Image 1 (cartoon, helix red, strand yellow):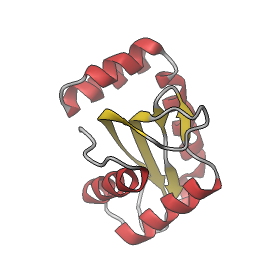
Image 2: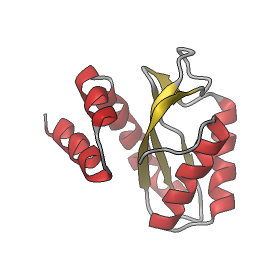
Image 3: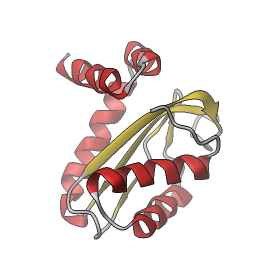
Image 4: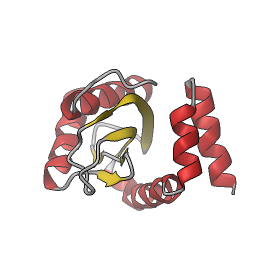
Length: 138
């Protein structure tokens, strides 16, 4: 955090690079998988949220990276609104069940106005993480 990219392709690359730095995997393979999934239907779910996701055989376990953009970014979202909060989820095929559950949990948490507002106000990664953990406990 914050997201530095200013367009959709840049955001996907930035998040994928961060995910690979933290969790391993092949950058090109994961980025292609994320872009292919995105080409099917935008993962911009509305309310300024995007949850790009993919499966890759090059990553060992389900992994998530998040970020917020100080400026709204056009993302072809379902509600046609730009996005400021991003959650990239990537895992191996063997984690398909966990993958679906994680997508559902993220979507459920960020539907709450107060959670979105707190995430956008977070000043660092720890505060962003703590906001998610706190929201999950409620």
